[in-house]
Length: 213
Image (cartoon, rainbow, N blue to C red; front, side):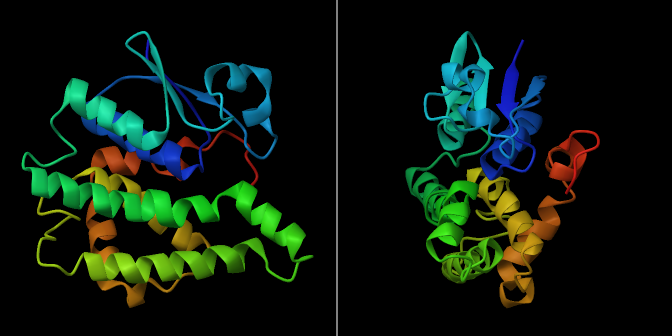
């Protein structure tokens, strides 16, 4: 049995949910409530030494870090998320990393809370996210203007870059980022929303019952 230990609103978990759907991998989900601090509990730390989500149990392995999980699925179930040519793979990874390594880390919950404490509330978590997502999307929008973008981030096939983009657009919309400033990103996100595996992975579809939002 494949088990995904995740939090429903975690961007990293969201990426992996999309990938599992695209690869057609049936799995069970185990909730790790980040708001309740479940990530620091013994049950999660036993599987994920960083105290993070997601963790994927598959093939007798315990995998952590969402991009590493995506590449494992690509190598064992693919090819699906990376182009066949080296230049294409480098471009897709650069786009994915621009989101997953530049935007998402500075916007995660622990950073937002720490900033609010350090500034004594002068900088709100929403203001912090809005600033860094907007700045990051400006760079990503320019990267997507290199002529190699098609219906999706790289040509007309869904790639790992798209899987990182979708959750970040969700976060951007939650904090009121004006997506009309990023027409390429917005258009790609709209097309991705129509893909069944992407739609099924949306937080609204995976939110635990009676969750306060």
